[in-house]
Structure formats: structure tokens, C-alpha cells
Amino acid sequence: MGMKVEKIILNPDNEDRIEFFVLEQTTVAGVDYLLVTDSEEGDGEALILKDKSKKEDTEAVYEIVSETQELKALADIFENLLDDVQFVSDDE
Image (cartoon, rainbow, N blue to C red; front, side, top):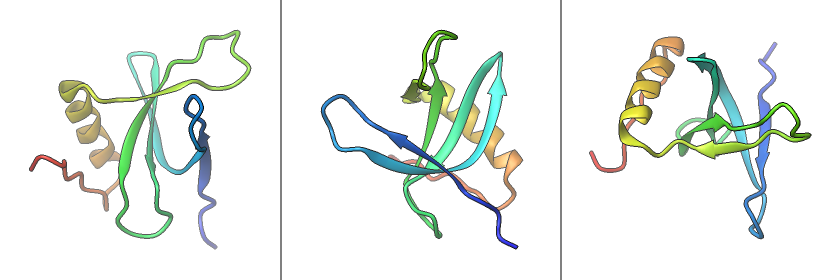
């Protein structure tokens, strides 16, 4: 029985909706992070999203993590959580 892959849909301001598949989630210092990919199978672009939602928000608000130190620390955490995931950054 395959694992149900959770999907998340980002709807950037006035842009087309983007669909991502959630690979894993974790909480660091009280902040929720999602590891998402644009491909359900195999190698895809992976992004780490930070939950910026406030309690009163009716929909979740996510921001793409782009700060290098934060990204590297989170990548290490997600690699430890997922045995078969390895991050390759664009600038390597």
C-alpha cells in the first residue's frame, strides 16, 4: 500500500497556482517547516517552506526559505529524517 502523498497548492499573488508534494515536515524552535517537491516521482526541485501563518489566518501562509544558513541547517535536518533524500544546491 503506497503512502498517500499530501499536496500543497501555492497561489502566489496574481500568479498561476503551483502544486507541490509534501515529502516531510518538521518543527524547529516552534516554527513548522515543510519539505516539498514539484515532482511526485524521483528527482524534482525541492523547496523548504516556512509556515508564517497566524492563528487568525483561515489559510496557511508559507514563505520559501531562501536564507543560506537557515536553508543549510534545515536541509541537514530533513536529510536525517529521510534516508533516501540528498540535497544538491544549484550553486554546487
